[in-house]
Image 1: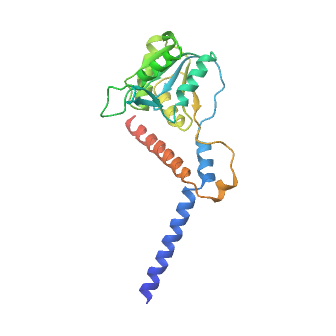
Image 2: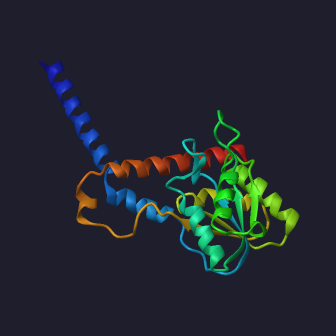
Image 3: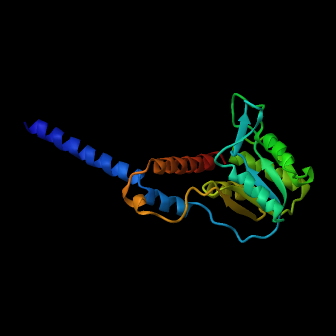
Amino acid sequence: MALVTKRSKKRKQYLILSLIFFFFFSNGFIVGKIINSYEAGYPKIQQYDVGIVLGGFSGLNKRNDEIAFSGASDRLFQAIALYKKGIIKQILLSSGSANLIDKEVKEADLALKYLRLIGIPDSAILIENQSRNTIENARYSLALIAKKNPQAKVLVITSAWHIPRAKIIFDRHTKNKIEYYPTNFSRGTEFELGDFIIPNTAALGTWELLFKEWIGLLVDRIRG
């Protein structure tokens, strides 16, 4: 009888812990406050020689062999807007292929075709199509800029949640000051009643994003 009682208590404890765990990680307010504090804010806007657009915003639509944009496509669209406003003089597309199977499809090449399609002149576009990750984004794109204009003022354009990791990596690869422009924020800064009390599966997705970035930070520190 005592053994049954102990097992029953343990089951209740596990159930309570599971409910607490589920409520914490599915709560929109909790993860919202964390992601809002983690994501980078806007820099004081000035003029830049080059805006580096980090990859991960598109792929190849094999049905028509055209570019297919992903949820991070705001990276490219914001770069285009910054160019049109005269804030950046050139757009540097930094992205090769992270696909181990189809290495021939280079994201930067796909994006180049799109920029040409909408009328961006080749003189305003730089291409770095060998990088497979953020470390290589920094290494290859900064090397390209150093050859053309060592004193160039550089703006890195990427997702708001990606900037903390990107900043550590890029700052490690240059002594020049670099600014960072955030795009596609994960969520707004306002909260509704449901965010406090109603479990939300979207919150789990945000946690997944954060954990990937935090693991990426750890791996990047190890790899250098």
